[in-house]
Length: 150
Image (tube, rainbow, N blue to C red; front, side, top):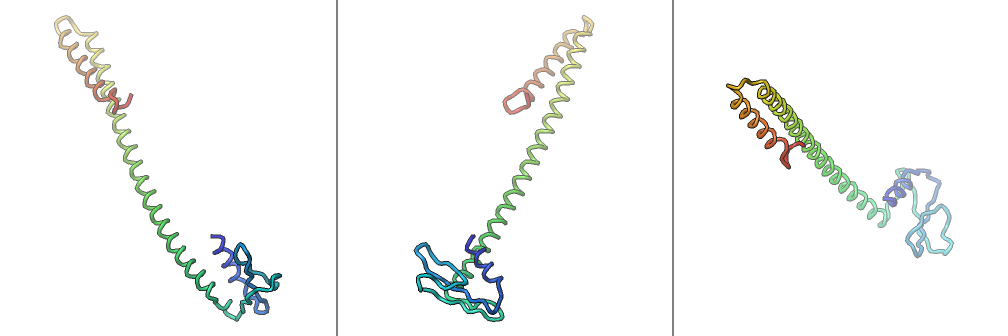
């Protein structure tokens, strides 16, 4: 990436009177406006449209194009992955909200059945207790299971 930025910087300089020297060192190449201290250098000529491409420049340009394509591909994959994750998160939130709403309604029915059982006459007490027990069982099965909301 640093090479691309350096190459872009070099290409953006369009002073026609400026010469650029490519110096080979142990660690690679250095571009400078001064001749190489070791004496081994290549002068890059400048014309009105920019630097004349050298074999290394052409390779660098091809590499830059290749890296741009790869970057676009990776960005597209990332956007697709993020869109899928957002969709999945929204679905999970919707399911959790639905489950919570259902559990709230079941809890309310259970409370009402228990109240009805406590206020029932002797004649309807057995039926009210059965209704309260069933409401409590339904609430427990739906909302207090490992997959339900606690």
